[in-house]
Image 1 (cartoon, rainbow, N blue to C red):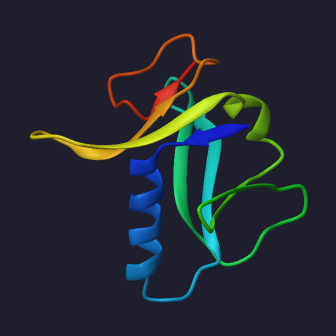
Image 2 (cartoon, rainbow, N blue to C red):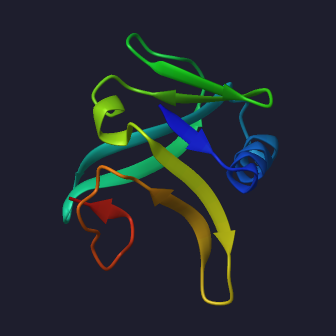
Length: 105
Protein backbone atom coordinates (compact mmCIF):
# COMPACT_ATOMS: atom_id res chain seq x y z
CA UNK A 1 0.00 0.00 0.00
CA UNK A 2 2.15 2.93 1.23
CA UNK A 3 5.57 3.21 2.80
CA UNK A 4 6.44 5.51 5.69
CA UNK A 5 10.05 6.62 6.09
CA UNK A 6 11.68 6.73 9.52
CA UNK A 7 11.36 10.54 9.48
CA UNK A 8 7.62 10.34 8.71
CA UNK A 9 7.06 7.83 11.53
CA UNK A 10 8.93 10.07 13.98
CA UNK A 11 6.95 13.16 12.92
CA UNK A 12 3.60 11.37 13.20
CA UNK A 13 4.50 9.94 16.61
CA UNK A 14 5.50 13.43 17.78
CA UNK A 15 2.15 14.83 16.58
CA UNK A 16 0.27 12.07 18.41
CA UNK A 17 2.27 12.73 21.58
CA UNK A 18 1.55 16.49 21.46
CA UNK A 19 -2.15 16.10 20.62
CA UNK A 20 -4.55 17.77 23.03
CA UNK A 21 -6.94 14.82 22.74
CA UNK A 22 -5.95 11.15 22.52
CA UNK A 23 -5.80 9.66 19.04
CA UNK A 24 -5.36 6.06 17.98
CA UNK A 25 -3.47 6.92 14.83
CA UNK A 26 -3.14 9.15 11.80
CA UNK A 27 -5.31 9.39 8.68
CA UNK A 28 -4.02 10.07 5.15
CA UNK A 29 -6.64 11.04 2.56
CA UNK A 30 -6.56 11.72 -1.16
CA UNK A 31 -9.35 14.00 -2.41
CA UNK A 32 -10.12 16.52 -5.15
CA UNK A 33 -7.62 19.41 -5.16
CA UNK A 34 -6.43 22.32 -7.29
CA UNK A 35 -4.53 20.13 -9.78
CA UNK A 36 -6.56 16.94 -9.64
CA UNK A 37 -6.00 15.29 -6.28
CA UNK A 38 -4.77 16.64 -2.96
CA UNK A 39 -3.30 14.91 0.09
CA UNK A 40 -4.45 15.68 3.59
CA UNK A 41 -3.52 14.22 6.95
CA UNK A 42 -4.85 14.38 10.47
CA UNK A 43 -5.11 12.66 13.80
CA UNK A 44 -7.73 9.93 14.00
CA UNK A 45 -9.51 8.41 16.98
CA UNK A 46 -10.94 5.28 15.34
CA UNK A 47 -10.75 3.31 12.14
CA UNK A 48 -13.72 3.45 9.77
CA UNK A 49 -15.37 0.74 7.72
CA UNK A 50 -13.31 0.00 4.60
CA UNK A 51 -10.12 1.54 5.98
CA UNK A 52 -6.74 0.08 5.17
CA UNK A 53 -4.63 0.14 8.32
CA UNK A 54 -0.89 0.45 7.88
CA UNK A 55 1.10 -0.36 11.02
CA UNK A 56 4.75 0.47 11.51
CA UNK A 57 6.72 0.69 14.77
CA UNK A 58 3.52 0.75 16.85
CA UNK A 59 2.01 3.51 14.70
CA UNK A 60 -1.33 3.11 12.89
CA UNK A 61 -2.09 4.99 9.70
CA UNK A 62 -5.63 4.80 8.33
CA UNK A 63 -6.64 5.25 4.70
CA UNK A 64 -10.22 5.18 3.41
CA UNK A 65 -11.30 2.93 0.56
CA UNK A 66 -11.57 5.80 -1.94
CA UNK A 67 -8.03 7.00 -1.30
CA UNK A 68 -6.37 3.59 -1.50
CA UNK A 69 -6.11 3.23 -5.30
CA UNK A 70 -4.65 6.74 -5.67
CA UNK A 71 -1.97 6.10 -3.04
CA UNK A 72 -0.85 2.60 -4.02
CA UNK A 73 2.95 2.48 -3.92
CA UNK A 74 3.28 5.96 -2.39
CA UNK A 75 6.11 6.83 0.00
CA UNK A 76 5.47 9.39 2.73
CA UNK A 77 8.50 11.24 4.11
CA UNK A 78 9.01 14.18 6.44
CA UNK A 79 11.71 16.66 5.47
CA UNK A 80 13.20 19.59 7.32
CA UNK A 81 14.77 22.40 5.34
CA UNK A 82 15.72 26.06 5.58
CA UNK A 83 12.65 27.33 3.73
CA UNK A 84 10.07 24.68 4.57
CA UNK A 85 9.46 21.57 6.59
CA UNK A 86 6.70 19.06 6.21
CA UNK A 87 5.42 15.84 4.77
CA UNK A 88 6.40 14.91 1.23
CA UNK A 89 4.36 12.46 -0.83
CA UNK A 90 6.28 10.52 -3.50
CA UNK A 91 3.44 8.98 -5.48
CA UNK A 92 4.24 6.89 -8.58
CA UNK A 93 0.62 7.35 -9.71
CA UNK A 94 0.98 11.14 -10.03
CA UNK A 95 1.74 12.36 -13.54
CA UNK A 96 2.49 15.92 -12.36
CA UNK A 97 2.23 18.14 -9.29
CA UNK A 98 1.09 21.71 -8.81
CA UNK A 99 3.06 24.63 -7.36
CA UNK A 100 1.74 24.12 -3.82
CA UNK A 101 3.33 20.66 -3.65
CA UNK A 102 0.25 19.20 -2.00
CA UNK A 103 -1.69 18.27 -5.13
CA UNK A 104 -1.14 15.95 -8.08
CA UNK A 105 -2.71 14.64 -11.29
